[in-house]
Image 1 (tube, rainbow, N blue to C red):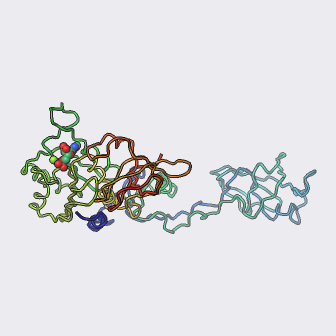
Image 2 (cartoon, rainbow, N blue to C red):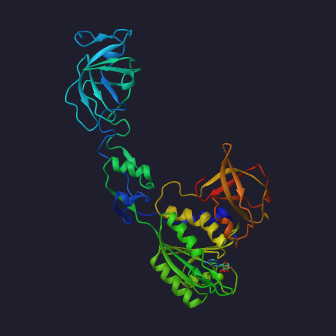
Image 3 (cartoon, rainbow, N blue to C red):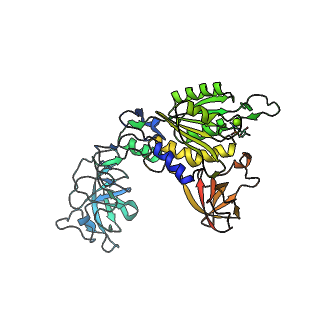
Length: 426
Ligand code: AMP
Ligand code: MG
């Protein structure tokens, strides 16, 4: 039995990260959602593209209004407003909605009506928000002077300067990144090809969910769990179905899977039973078996093998074991293989356990349950019911796997515990 850390590093070292020169697709922007950027993106555009207003209000010259005095030489339009000590009045010479280029250069004593996002006219350097003004015809009185030069102006290039790196290769493209690409008019996006992952279920006892169940048979739920997990990890799923425990049939299926996929995941047939043929077939196919079992519970029998162009994961058949070992070992490998530069590692957080967590101490153990926020703290409550590797039912609704380290037999209620997040915290 390999220690979890040893197994993990063997697996991560074997993962080949994609090569942007060969593993790159150019796709339209909306097809890039959730894909991983294969090349760095920069833009020839500044962001904002030009000086613009952050408020509905008036574009002014700061020197005109800063002191509450009109700049020297302004007699016709700049006047101290009656009843407002220090307030001044400017001539409104232009109206600039968003999307329209200003036509005039603002002269001392002048203001332009301006709206959020609209381009600043030449000569203006500061915005006074509408709420701090009073408009009368073609004049505006500044009731509250701006606090500083440039107030409510978004400067050209203030958020991003043309030519600087914008998004790095290896970035996952979520909503914010897609919006950034749209804003800089990047409509064709270089993304890594998704790794192809073949899934097969082994076992004479297995039937598909739409087949009538005969006594003793078991529904192949792993195919569906693994398809969901692979898809959520950003890879392309090739569902290869059920293969009986027949060495010739299994060898043919494994060979076909290895030929067409970057990663093969089978479940079942890796234990020490009479019908567990996976390891032997891998050896016959020339694979290097790197791992046969890991000191983890659930999930001890786990085969990991490397072939020239393919990684092979033989997961245990028990539904919970298959799911836990996928999350702990396969998912990070898949995310790494999909090109993610950061954030591909297992996502452990610290939460307070609501009750005692127990283990036999012989293997690193995982108990499934729910992580929630309670009074501002992350808390973990184990799922009710049996925690054995065949009980798939109480896994539904869980979002975390509490880890009890090897050697530890209990984590007391109220203590901090490390939890592998399976999905978001609600
Ligand atoms: P095995 O590792 O092949 O000995 O299988 C261990 C247990 O997991 C057995 O009870 C199998 O019936 C069950 N099992 C194996 N494969 C699957 C599967 N694809 N879906 C659900 N249960 C399975
Ligand atoms: Mg089996």
